Amino acid sequence: MILFTDVTKTYDNGTKALSNVNFFVEQGEFVFIIGASGAGKSTITKLILREEMPSSGSITINTTDITQIPNKELPYYRRTVGVVFQDFRLLSNKSVFDNVAFALQVTGASSREIRRKVPEVLSIVGLTHKAKVRADELSGGEKQRVALARAIINNPPVLLADEPTGNLDPVNAAEIMKILNLINKSGTTILIVTHASEIVDKMRRRVIEIDRGVIVRDQKFGAYSA
Ligand code: ADP
Image 1 (tube, rainbow, N blue to C red):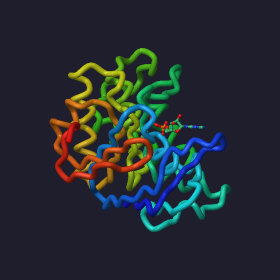
Image 2 (image 1 turned 180 degrees about the horizontal axis):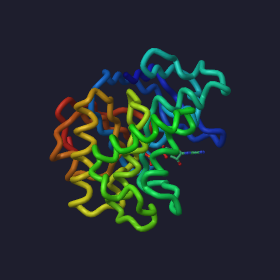
Image 3 (image 1 turned 60 degrees about the vertical axis):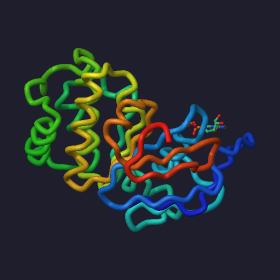
Image 4 (image 1 turned 45 degrees about the horizontal axis):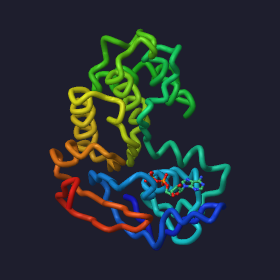
């Protein structure tokens, strides 16, 4: 679960990116965060990842107030949040298998566990046949599927996706949404920052809209436009 309580974020240069933001996302929910450029969407994802600290307020992820996590424990916390970005962020000269395996290796997983788990998640994203291909030889849709596999390999309770379909054509975008739905069905909380109005309209999931740092709409079966 994700709980923002009276969260305000003012950056060092004085820009107030969020003011008194309150929302609660239950475990297993599927939520779109929408809003114009500069509204504060990325600030929310940066706060959840503890890349930024709120100026005031508290943020609870699962059972922990993450503003209280000591810096040395951040790598452990961050493994509990899966992330995918618009630009994929793969190791381009490594194979699909190695890209996904890397996320397990950093947790100290045994090679036996890696050999068991990587094929499992590659199968979920439909890339079993591409395991040996180098990441830079994949299409955009395939790259994002690798990124999804990497994001879920440690079974995170929360998955954050920042414009996951931003670089994809409609067919590949729909495929990525299908996989996100599948991941959600297994109980993972999903938070998607997006401008893709047609996807938001089709999915009819919860929509949280932000305007200049303030939540202006929080709708259960929402569309892109109110
Ligand atoms: P969005 O993701 O909705 O486009 P952001 O969260 O990136 O919006 O930005 C919200 C506001 O905070 C904007 O006015 C932006 O210019 C400002 N901002 C974002 N990051 C920083 C930063 N590191 N330093 C100063 N201002 C920032």
